[in-house]
Amino acid sequence: MIMPSDKDYKETKQIMLGKKVMKPEFKPLADWIDKTYEVKTVNIFYDTIDKGTRPRLEICFEHPKEKSQFNGPNGFNFDSDKQKAIGKKFKETLKEQGLIQDSGLFGLFKKQATSKYKTENIWVIYGDFESIARIEANESVPEQKVKELKTELDNNDIWEISRAFSGTTIFLYTDEQVKKYENSEEHKRWTDKYFELLSQYDEFGYFKRESFSVYLDSKENFDNNYESNWYYYYK
Image (cartoon, rainbow, N blue to C red; front, side, top):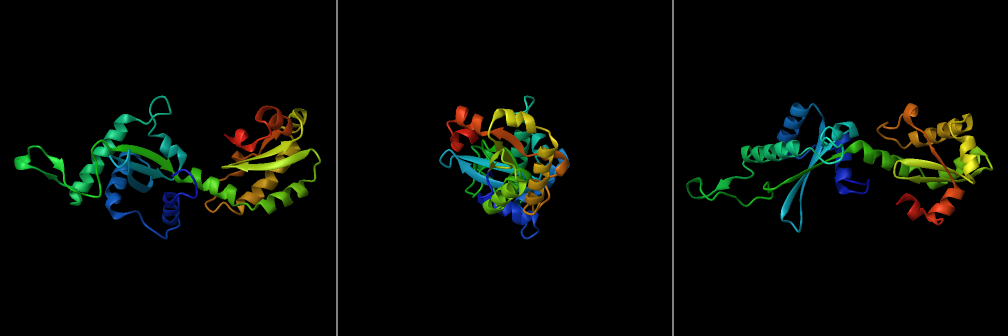
């Protein structure tokens, strides 16, 4: 679940809106995760990678701060102990529901019976709904509305208003102009105006004015350091 166009995001959004529910076979695992780690699991996805040879389980929380609880000490890699614990519990819940079983002569040479779910060497990963919902909200603002906002701001120092993912940047012409407007009353007014527009498309109210700001940059920087290319700039 990376972008608003992903089917997993669309499914989770329907759950958040109360129009769908999590697949029932995942509910016992979600309840265990919530109780064990004091979080709120909103959805769980299962698929396979490496040409179908390795199962993968994505646990989706609502907020990024919940997802971050499953990172390792360095803050980037996942906590392997939690991954193993969740993978083990997933197997247990499937067995309890009769969705997988061990088979073999007198319990020897056990192997997993045929099932749509595999659990051996499962890779557990995490996602959060809020981060993608923020992207969707920002990208849902019509380009025509952004152009109208630029006209409304009525400042000849503004070259362009550009959006990418959940962030919005007002480009001035020069680096000196960026310094002039950074954290100024005018910058605050621009942020107020864009936030007012953005809020109309923020279905879940994840953007808060006290922590929101439009970024400032310059055409000078864009031209000199990114070859006047949006792909390079947002890469």
